[in-house]
Every structure is written in structure tokens, then in C-alpha cells.
Length: 165
Image (tube, rainbow, N blue to C red; front, side):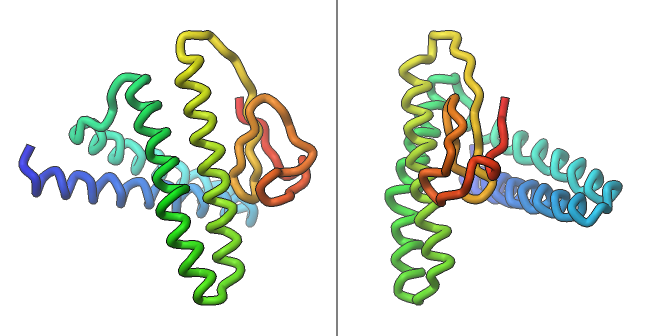
């Protein structure tokens, strides 16, 4: 594939991914404010943006076997937690922005947890293992099979978790 085409496909994937997330957040806000038709509009367009991003990923040949996808996801989480967030935390600390530093620190810790979940999934790939996940609405921490009384990353109470099946 031509390098320029590959670069713009990646840019399109990033842009579509960001748009989809932004629209989902907007939908949640519209729903909180009881603008249900607007929330629905944001969600349907978010899904459309996801389709655009998926098409770019397919052209980039980024979707491989499940084993390869798990390995790539594991490596990405380790990289983000160990390199990117460390830089972000350092920058926020130097700027004396405690809120940003806290968000980055919690995100790094959650990314470490994601890496552990991927590693465990790679080890148990051939098993048919059913589990329920619990996700902290505050920081994004994912608990595998157990609803914690308190989030080990941000301290949120168990009422701040949602069940993901």
C-alpha cells in the first residue's frame, strides 16, 4: 500500500474514533438533560463513525487473528501505561495541575489492569470462560468477576460500578 494512503487511512481511523467517543459522551449528556431524541441522534452517528473507523482498520490490515489481536492489545496497554502516561503525569506535575496528574495516574493504573486482563485472556484462550466484568464509572477500572466494595484505583464506592456482560 502507498505510504501516503496508509498515513491518511490512519488519520481517518483516529479522527473517526475520536468523533465516535465524543458523540457517545454528548449522547450521555443529552440523555441526562432529557433530550432523548438528540441522545439517539448522537448515538446513531457515533455508530456510523465507528463503521468508518472499522473500514480504515480493515484496509490497514490491523485486524488479525484473535491471538494476534490480544497480543497487540496487550503490548499497546503496556506501552501506553509505561511510556505515554508517565510523560503525561510528569508534564502535569511540572505544571502543578493536580487534577490532570490524578486523571493521568489513574488512567495509567487502569491501563496496567487492562494489560493484565489481556495477558490472562491469552493464557486461557482455548477455555470457554464466562465472566462478568464490573467497570468503574469514575476512572474506568475493570474488575474481572467480582464487584469490589471500593475501586482499587480511585476509591469510588461499589455503587459507582456498572455490570458489563
